[in-house]
Image 1 (cartoon, rainbow, N blue to C red):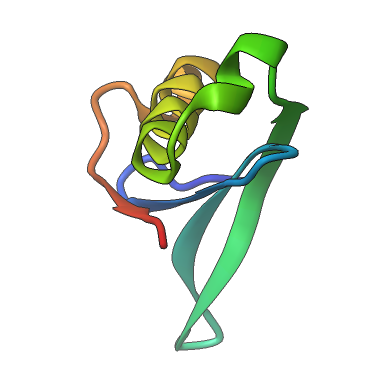
Image 2 (cartoon, rainbow, N blue to C red):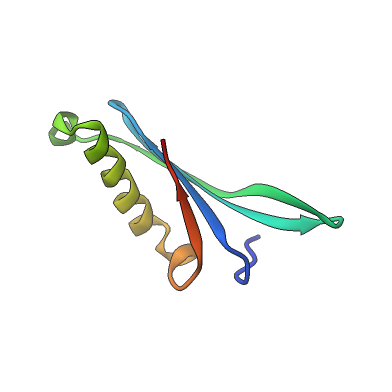
Length: 83
């Protein structure tokens, strides 16, 4: 269960096959910080997206993930982690 007062981490990655994202959050459990997943999402790329370069694919993945996960991220603090 997410803690809306704590920041999130959005991990994204894209390749020639598809897009993927993982939303994580670090919470304090037994006085220790533990990072755990909130949710995972993925999809195949569309035929027109096959022509995109690596940077364009990563940007596409970020925009797509933000649209899909807006319920969690709107009005919150979060970091985006990508390669």
